[in-house]
Length: 187
Image (tube, rainbow, N blue to C red):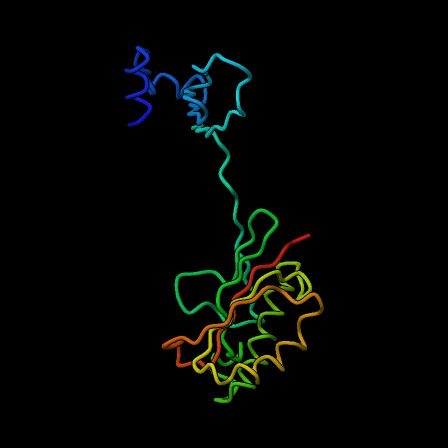
């Protein structure tokens, strides 16, 4: 490791990391040769000390799954959405009717409408709304459907519209015509 080479260069004793775990967090620094808070540059004021703290007792980021029967169940080992750090991360949503698990129809317009309704139910179950959405990703089976999708999509998202990416993909689950995922801010 680079810091070990620096320790040898400056004749620093080896650090027993195991003993630090029970006493204090380990700190590695980046500066003008800064290690564990010791700055070897002695001329003039020190530049800001950037550090990466590693602690064995750090509290993990909590994540909470969101699940509602008013939107289609996940098709695999994933959640409809996850709440974490005041954000909502919604999995890709298809135009399935929740009660039947079947597509509303084969048309991209009907599937888009159903996708957005399903997204609304997941947003509602998480305490969010369409206005809370900050980013969407749209996956289309055929990019020629872009204009049709835009006309429907625009009715659901108030100004300012969320940031968005749209892609044509090789295939979607269950041969869907459209899939949309999103990220929303929670209040």
